[in-house]
Length: 158
Image 1 (tube, rainbow, N blue to C red):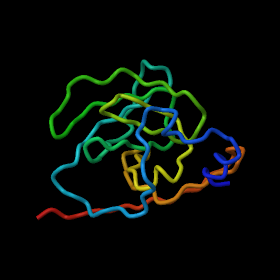
Image 2 (image 1 turned 135 degrees about the horizontal axis):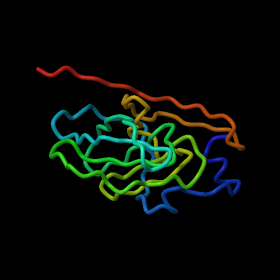
Image 3 (image 1 turned 60 degrees about the vertical axis):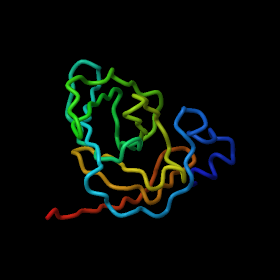
Image 4 (image 1 turned 45 degrees about the vertical axis):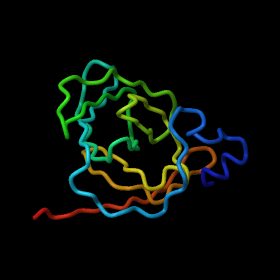
């Protein structure tokens, strides 16, 4: 079942409406990379909130939220570019049992989500630091299985 079907059957409605994240129009097209205005954020995760492990670097546009695959109980982050922030944000704790979460670095907010059409086009940070753009996401009604497609892009400088 796709998320829109789950919402239609009363399985939670729009995550954007519940979380404080702004509603987004459905995005199918991803624009070209715009070298020069990206932000880079270091992300760490922890099972207990005390011992931290590097998860990856989230490259994103200013103000853009980031999806994270396989997040653990706690996560924290700090900005590296364009200006390095020496302090980590307060740890953000998981509030559900989904395979993904959406994080707004600027707002220091996290929500565990089943991605929907409103999340298509957003960057997704994978364990190890690879980042791609969400193109499609589907999951079973009981949450036992899911499938998604990411787009990866690159550019050479010079």
